[in-house]
Image (tube, rainbow, N blue to C red):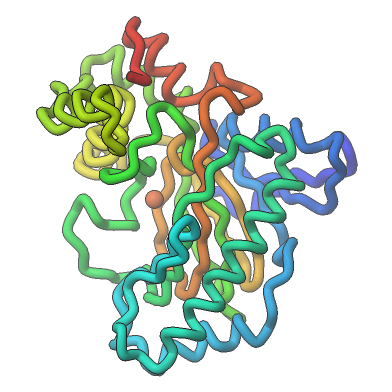
Length: 311
Ligand SMILES: [Fe+2]
């Protein structure tokens, strides 16, 4: 592989075109564009160790939460723009430290991304971070909330209007890998579903129309575009489709203890099969910042549906 990079498939259950791993063993500013291309075309970038400052004390503190796990919600989230921590009881004695740890993680990973993926610098938007302290295997969740079914991500309350969802994960578990199944990238799996009439553009919701009016009046709301509505619909459709879950090309990937990985989760179908204790930071990359816009889900959908989707 060019630039001394190692292409490494940790595990492969099924051949085909399912997303793979690209291990990052070093990086220079000249390689940044190539990494962006890999990510946008549906590859997962893997770092064997965390490529930014992440104090061992913080890791131990997060792991210690397992003894008191019942106090926590399934997902603790941190909102960098407002410096808010959600999902922890207000009277929890660990709350302040948890807040500090999440704030530090969010800042460090954001600083790293500005250097590592330089083509996005100045345009990438920092979204929420999360701590996932529960074991993924065997969770009892309603179908649309299940993590162990292949899906692409879409946010009901944070429309992207065609921007892409990038997520950076760290497996802080000292001894157990986090295991995913991953499928074919969006530009491979989605057009055939649309062309076959299996997945159709959903009717525009009343909420989208009202939000559009409010936005035109200058109110601070972000309207859902056709693209956002389609992606929410697709998220549910994929989880509901026994055929897609069973027959679509997929492979298992293991993320070893202490590793870090990043992936566009709106473009790579993924399912968390097992693992406990992950940290995650989400970024939104606007369409105009992409280096391979032709494989962005919004452009792929516009091409196959023959109409604009980002509004
Ligand atoms: Fe997801």
